[in-house]
Image: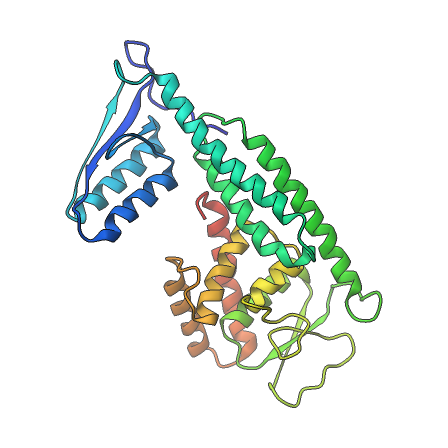
Length: 325
């Protein structure tokens, strides 16, 4: 829903706006890029060179104030003020600017969802759908004036998600020989001495796939699967690394868990496990340190899953509550 201004109209009857005027030093180059990206994420509209506006809300004021402090701390200059425009730009023009920007975001999401829907097999694009849902949520969070493209983007993403879930159901039915037993109380097997990908995957399995899952930990070599067991993060496992995906990402995609919070956790787990900094999220280093502490402080795999499960449950709750995951 659009964010309603918390400041009443001015005495002239014109809409109040918040304005950020700033100047950043020419070096380092990354500072200018950092400021521009932050302005895009909070939904600020450019008015003139180095002048940006937002509707006058409490959240917008907080966003501009934090950004202004960062600019000043990095050697720049920044001022935040409240204004009503008298000449040069009309309120209607600014509102149209915000709507146009969000409609472009919605159009990109809808186009991505339409392109996704023609890919085969459908079970392979759950992670991509998760990214689209996150992009849609981010655009909606800064859609201050109810851009008309939102409804179409939501319908297109919902249609792609419905197809993914149907395909994921078919995937489950095809497991094993013909019809697989229901995913309830199954034995899930993985390697001993669990670390981040196996800890996170076990949490995901028990939380979203098989609430009554039982876990078995085996040596990497010499293990022979028993009938009905499901393997993860093992060589030739039913669920393991696929392409550039870690096991957690594979499970998310194969079971159609297209949820932005899980997508974010998958990116963090990927970077810790694969050590390639593909997503470079700011939370990754902290999560890596916590997982390392769990591994060091708990010798048994069962204890690591218990402690790690609590960690990932809290991460999931945190990312669900954040509009800009």
